[in-house]
Image (cartoon, rainbow, N blue to C red; front, side, top):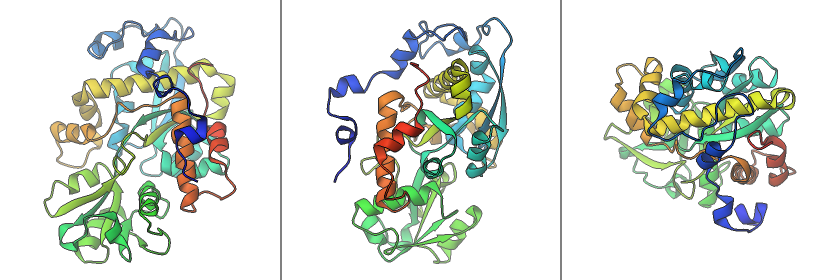
Length: 356
């Protein structure tokens, strides 16, 4: 059976389903945590962020992040430009590097209150029962399948019988491009070989002919493509995924259950940081610069950010639809258990903190 938004959640009016999250944030009050967003516009971030935080002591929050992932630059924007404080939060950022499993475990065990991570890294762990709830999507993009032009591969169907290099066997790139290969009629388990290398050796493996393509993320993959010897075969912004979220906000379940206003404030702050990044990508690039690959400039980092869809931040029913679609696709490629129902899974791992 083909799954889509209508089969998962019913037909209905597409316009009403795709509600305007920014309009929602502008009209909803912040439950006593911060001032309303009614006056917010994309051109007024400096003024709004400089406003004092709500009266009273700021709520201390530990937020897990991966400082090497440029797509998470909005988190650093929220810290540097006072967005967290505007929402009554005193946020300590905890860098878990590229260890997204450790990041998710930290949230589930209460060592952190929340974090942002890649959906196709987290969803399998959430299927297994981690006490983390998804409250918002942050952006699309940042996973790429690239190859040397000399390999002669320009499309997914030409990868049958080939070897794809990955940084680890549970990587979001492996999961996503397994989904794309499956949609193209290629069995991602039997028709291709996935070969693991340390991230810094993937290019060398391609140069030596040990692999025919590389599945990896930004900023590395973006900058590989600046070298004319590389070509992009696919990304998570094509082949029908142009409007699909890539990274998601996850909060510890106990925070949502015990302190919903703080969970809502944290989610809203992160969504506003996404808006800021779209309006002022230079700010996001500067915030990420200390963690960027050596020698990269603000202008180059802006190019990476603008290649991603930081204006795609689904919440509510739209986010649940996207989660359920991913669950079905991961089940199709045998990452999820066949017994997992996609809609039930989405209902279980999503939490609506913005309208509760």
